[in-house]
Length: 156
Image 1 (cartoon, helix red, strand yellow):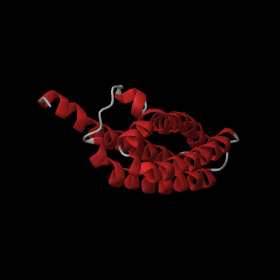
Image 2 (cartoon, helix red, strand yellow):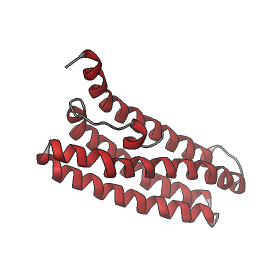
Image 3 (cartoon, rainbow, N blue to C red):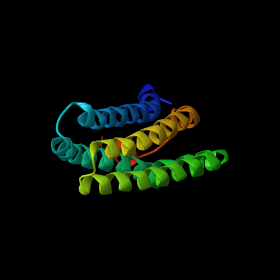
């Protein structure tokens, strides 16, 4: 295996870490928009912008994993299928929570309620990311996958 091939293989684990880092940052920015002392109406308006971007990015990331990354891992490492199923279940739960947040934002819920939605998403997302990284980073260092990072991990 050439050095370039090794670098590309290891890059999948780095790509996953970077996407998770960017999603964590986006959530922090979203939560900060509720606590920076602006009026409820302004915070809700800002959150609508942040939420749409954050929610779309997180949803796209999970759909890319479900569609491309997880099938490739399952084919190369069938012993990880239970782990992948658990991660897919997390994706479904997070999508449900994102839907609740989007509905709350669209009906201009008070900042306290919006923060509760974000807190739930944050807790599940962080747990999910840590589990995923513990279970898959080593596998990603040797996974051969002919796709772009955007296709596999979302457009971040």
